Image (cartoon, rainbow, N blue to C red; front, side, top):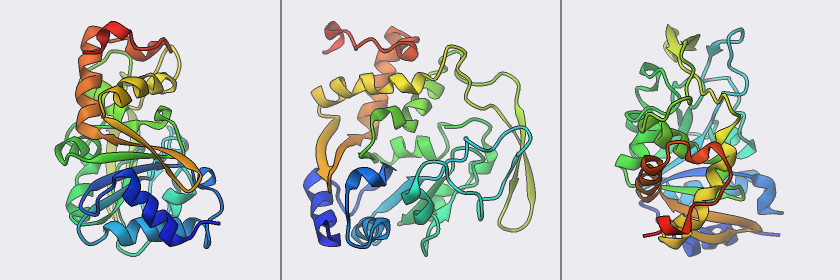
Length: 260
């Protein structure tokens, strides 16, 4: 059984620094048995980073927010992406963004500033929103026991490169319940994949990410993990999308002659 100190040691060994901006995609069950369970895992991350870094978990609601159930309340709406995300957003000091489908919660330095303004965007991963700010902050993204198929950041890279057939043409009519009680109308262009879910092919980028040192492999508890550099991921993926805008519409590996 792993202890909090074991988790802390693993964070250090994989290369996370207490001054980092770090977003965590997570699968708690992959970590294995931890003394104190999921809360201990969060305690380790938060205590390691809360003073000098910024710790972020996605708290997405795309699974349940729809045309009928269309009011997002950040104070009560559960996340659809795992137990750690739901526990994290309830922690003291956590600030949740007001994005109706792809919100995040943050604890640490600049959490308020980082999460602000998401109610103003009409797409899942605006370049000026929280996902684009990861690039600006030279953030790291940790895949804790999950694959790069969960890489929301690549959704953003496709959006910023204006890849066709990724967003609904007609906006949906969502509403956001702000903490001050205001109801914010938010016409919104959700993700749209006419040929299927392209994110299932995002993990084809793992070999080139590892090749160029953009991703580093390690373990936290029992979980196989990848720690990735957001800038490197965005730049290399953008380069590949310029070569082939339909890159993620199949699962074929990246051609070897694309490796510089």
